[in-house]
Length: 319
Image (cartoon, rainbow, N blue to C red):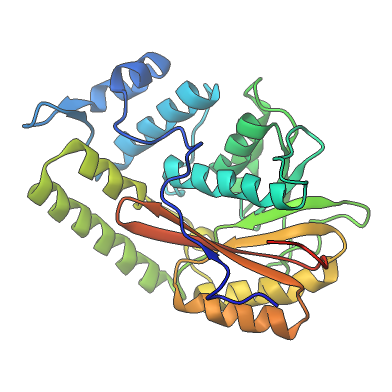
């Protein structure tokens, strides 16, 4: 059995990630004119936006998706999570490397590769990037009907996107049941679980991030520093996106327990884990239920370290 200490892969921003370095604002504005009013030249002569302005961040996301992924139509309802694109892309690229482990070292591409995004949200970003970068098929699930409606609208109104289906999870207690059909097989599942244990905790966390961003901007004043801060900042977010009873730990432990029922229908289960101390708890639970192989992959964006844990019930997987 692998363990947390001997099987952790540490990484900076993934080498295939298209979002390294400074943003090319002229190119982004060309792809999405909506971004132009938000771009300003700061005191150091660098073009940037105000990353504490949700509308500016959303316009930047629209431009990034249009420019890099040929997705000209993208939007989210007011109050829904506006995700940092670079970090989302890193998760996708690291999953591609994970799939190569069980594919003779080659990253599998094409519509026959199928992923499940648990908690797709209204933004549909993970399926967009995975579909455009590797041509994978996706099912996106969510307990929020409005999220499913918007994610489906995005998937169905961009001609470049093929093979993305969004399904409503009608039972909040279930993660995979009711979504994975009896005859379906998924090459992987992925999830950005609710981080907080209550609405008050989620609100306080958002306010703290915004204060930190403003303080760093005043201190550093540099466009690249602003971008690194923005990559870690999420604006908005509904209850299902930000918090659940018991917080992140309760959610990922439930995911581990429920994964056992679908051990023959999923090659790799994965989930992001924001709190480092929760990794060991997830390992304990997975080992208790008989998981064959567990792997932790760390990702870095500036000073922010994130990670996801992957597990498979397949025997003899050589990591």
